[in-house]
Length: 310
Image (cartoon, rainbow, N blue to C red; front, top):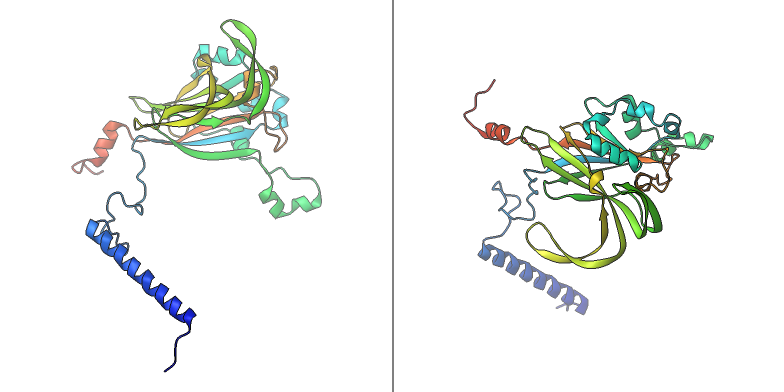
């Protein structure tokens, strides 16, 4: 009789032990009533990690663009771009506060103009040499536009970084007391994005500029479920008079950028200085409302099985 070699015996033993452990795990799961049968026609139990996450019923879907303004925009102070932007949809006091601090903002409603489309979907920036005209080079060349999609719930703002960390800077702030230079260390520009549903439909969308600065310190913050946990956070300098907000419906956009004829030390310049990826000194942020929950009355009608069909 042939004897098995020690390696073969060890492999067989390991396979046997693995089979026993798997069987024990399945039996234990079945005894707890939580075993998942993936290939069954029965739905997966609630709480299963294999079930897709259900979207929040009150979440709003947003597209967020950071787009570098082309050098040609500096010639006419973006006149062509702003010709179809509705600045009057912002409160007059807000527009004055923004202008004093180097910001410019408005709403793009309806079908976007050619200038807005070109801003958000520009041709790739490629070199003039023949090699750069290759199709592959065009596909991989930078465009100066960065796009993300986020879900935002009422009462749960999200933070959008508008700049990198700056070791030391002094910003010229023009608030109620007149222009004052305010120094900051370890500073970065941040927009706080919030949404608030309106009773008659639509949502109020706001972008609040903040300067986060100083060394991070541990603070206790809530996660929305009344549970607090420590998190390193910087000091926050808010500017309530410059909280940019407008009522939007699905498809509309809120556009914010800086003014080219203002000081480089202005708050607007600090928030909208281009990152140098392509030609252009300034950038814009565009927030587009792409999906929103139905108003309560419409949602109830959609669920009503007795509603008439047309």
